[in-house]
Image (cartoon, rainbow, N blue to C red; front, side, top):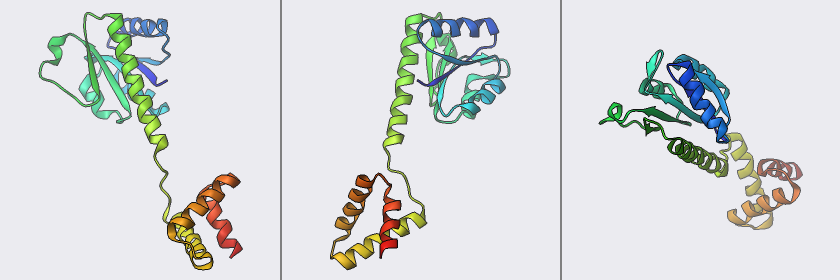
Length: 180
């Protein structure tokens, strides 16, 4: 589950929103009254949701958004009049007066979006350093020259040996280079 940080100008408002989230099964990582406090709190997290009001002690929500990493989503609770004509990336608005159902559904939607991004990042192939790529290419070259394999066959061979032995492809390539 994504980290949730609640930030409002008044401490009691922040605690009330925190309590609503906690009663509905969410863990709130921090309660803040200033943007500086939020920015300090996010240093401990890779991603998360900031639930805040239109204004916090030292800045407006869009000023805070500009200073947040892209991995963080922002949920702003304010009257609809505050948002006329304003749209910022990574900001979702929930109108006041607040309905708990709207808050919880929106937090769930943002949490799901963060989880999808995490899964997508996890499934992306890892980039290799130039040295690692050179080892892999050299191992393929050896297999191609000694065993008459195509580059694709050599790659698949290294891939299969790596999977069978429980090592990564670079380690397998190093083993091939050491053997020959």
